[in-house]
Image 1 (cartoon, rainbow, N blue to C red):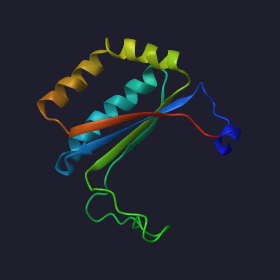
Image 2: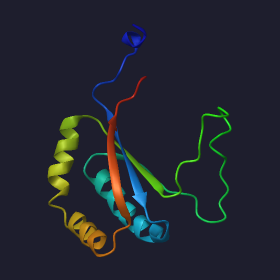
Image 3: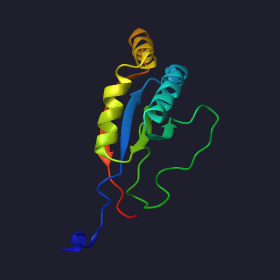
Length: 130
């Protein structure tokens, strides 16, 4: 079987969160993101950033250039966050400790007052190669 030869690093993983955002509330998302980047770093994770739809006037390539007929442009209301932890134990420790942090409570209160996304999906991915 072809994928039997793949070697995965089972300990390190990256969390990818896909948000459905309100493009009119990217400023709120930016404030939310700054808080969570700091919290994840504070509690042992490595944050790779938040990635948002290009703002007006920012030029990016079309999605269809690599495989004509297969690629499509994604909806303009998607944003992504990526962060990694060295192992599940470190992630579980982060989840316990961050829930007690006042900055976490403040971020949640700001979000509840003025939500910057309407939906999210969370994936945990492991690297295919070292």
